[in-house]
Amino acid sequence: MNPIIFCDFDGTITAEETFVAMLKEFAPDKAAQIMPLLYRQEMTLREGVRTMLESIPSRCYPEIIEFSKTKKIRPGFVEFLDFLNTQEVPFILVSGGVRVMVETVLGDLTQKIDGMYAVDLDTSEEYFKVNSEFEADTELVAKVKVMELYPNPEKIVIGDSITDLNMALATPLVFARDRLAKYLDEYQKPYINWTDFFDITDHLSQKWNIL
Image (cartoon, rainbow, N blue to C red; front, side, top):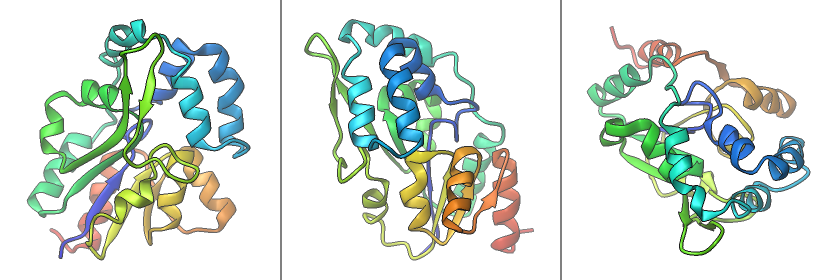
């Protein structure tokens, strides 16, 4: 059975933290209060992200879609998906953010993704209501639970922040950058630092002996 990739979206596939930027834009007071607590691990993602999202009026939904359209993808991502396709390695996107933002940023690239897990928003009431099929323990999207759906023995994680910590700790091979790298340093967990997806493609090409 081939290896499988589990990849974060916000700040990983995107060149900047799109979801965090949206929260700061549409829930500035809650974001200023809660984000530092999340980064210091003094509040769970499950509680913090839900509180921030559910403080946003549903009327903001179209604005959030427009906000997402301006966000850039990190260099090498398209080429990385093509590389994985040639190697028949599945690519699973696991986001602690909002599905509509992921789909808006990626556009047609969603067709090249083998699985996508994220938070859904119910806009039927005055404020957003959060729905997540994989809500558990401390996470709104429990990424390790998603990984357990796939029997592939060689799992590889790509991430950048606190939402990726649990799946990084549960996986032998991790590509980490930014905050995630610092967390893994604290846990003395080995990882490979990366800047763009060309770095990851190069490393995996060597690992898999691809010329």
